[in-house]
Length: 255
Image (cartoon, rainbow, N blue to C red; front, side, top):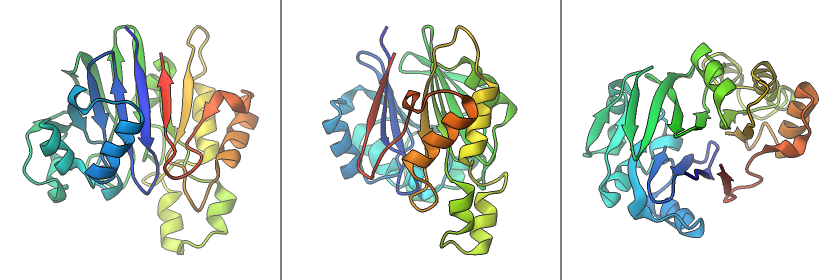
């Protein structure tokens, strides 16, 4: 069975990913308007009728802005833990299927495991999606790699992993000091160096991984900086890493 991961948006301006097989799909986060997400799906050849559920990682607006409208327009349930749902009043009235951290649920022919992240949100999580022998990790918006995410990163065939900022750019950038401290803390975001160290620690023989660098900061990072840093630390050539190059860019990763 083939598996496709469509990264429709990744960053502080909005996040949305679709994981699909031949005719069934799930969406992870909906941090853009319904109109924008529908447009991106059309461009990427994704049939909205195939999407069976919307999974939410946490309640920040760049992950839930369009969640309620998407769920109602497509007639699909939202999956997330109760604390995240309660912290997301903007979602409105939808069918909510509560999830539990470190517990697996099945949807659209896929088994999904919710993994704890470390972020300034109610109960944020990553998702580890398994379909047949194929495994996809979606782990952004975390200040550090938690032990469960590290284990999943070892096993993943496709990993969307946080690589938010370059330390020098953050230190010298326009953000106020309190925000710089939050971003660089364990409850903020991961740097290029931290991402590279996680990738290097989890390199395993026999696992052919595709690494996508997620949630790059518009002001504190660049695609070239992220790729160069991670390549230098891991020893893996930079063209093996992918990320969105500009706003409105999308990617399709296939297994």
